[in-house]
Amino acid sequence: MIIDRCLEAYGGAEFWKNLKRIDAEVSVSGLAFSLKRRPFFKNAKIEMEVQRPYSKITPIGKNEKITGVLEGHNVRLEDENGQVLKERKNPRDYFPLGRRLFKWDDLDMAYFANYAFWNYFTFPNLLLNETIQWKEIASGYLLAQFPDSIPTHSKKQEFRFDPETGLLKQHNYTANVISKFANAANVVHAHRKFEGIPFPVSRIVTPQGKKGKAMKKPVLINIQVNDITFIK
Image (cartoon, rainbow, N blue to C red):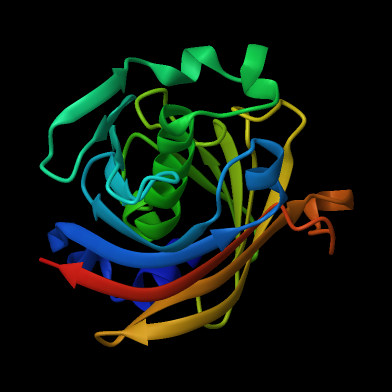
C-alpha cells in the first residue's frame, strides 16, 4: 500500500503520531498573491500544531509585527504580544465573491495561507486521520475525501507519489476560496532532510492541464522552505 510506503518514507507513523508542532521559515511568491494584491512572504515564520488545525504566520502582511492565526475554522490577527487585534468567525463563508475577487485583507490571507500550509506541512499525519477517506486509485495515486471539520482547499484531492520511494510528487486540488474553477497542481520539486526526516522544500503550483498534469505556466504559487524544526 502506498500509504504505508509514504509514512515510512517520512519517518514512520509513530513519529507523526507523537509530533506536536512544526516550525518553519518560508518564502512564497506567485501570481495568486499579486492578483489578490498581497505582498509576498519573505522569510516568514510559521508555527503549526500537528494534531489539530492550528497555524500562525508572521508577518501575515506588510506590518512585520502582525501575526495571522488560524484555529479550527476561525482566524484572527495578533500583535507581537499576542493581543487579538481583529478576528473573523467562519471566514470561508465570505469567499470567493465581492471584493475578494480582486483584493484580500490580512484576515483573508491568514485563512488561506494558514490552512494551506497546515495541510501541506502536516500531510503525512493526515494519512492517519480517520475522518479522511483515502483510496488508492492507481499505483502511487491516492484520492482523498476530506470532511467538513478540516479546513482545506477542496473536499476531493489527489496525491501522487513516487511508487518506489513513497515520497510525494504532486498534490492536485481545487482552491475553492479562489474559484470553483481554480484546479491547481502542486508539484514537489525537491526534498531535504531535517533531523533525518525528508521534507518537501520546493513546491511550484500551476493550473492543472489534461488528466491533472501540471502546466508549466503561470506560476500561481512558488513555495521555498528555508528551515524546518520538528517539536515533540
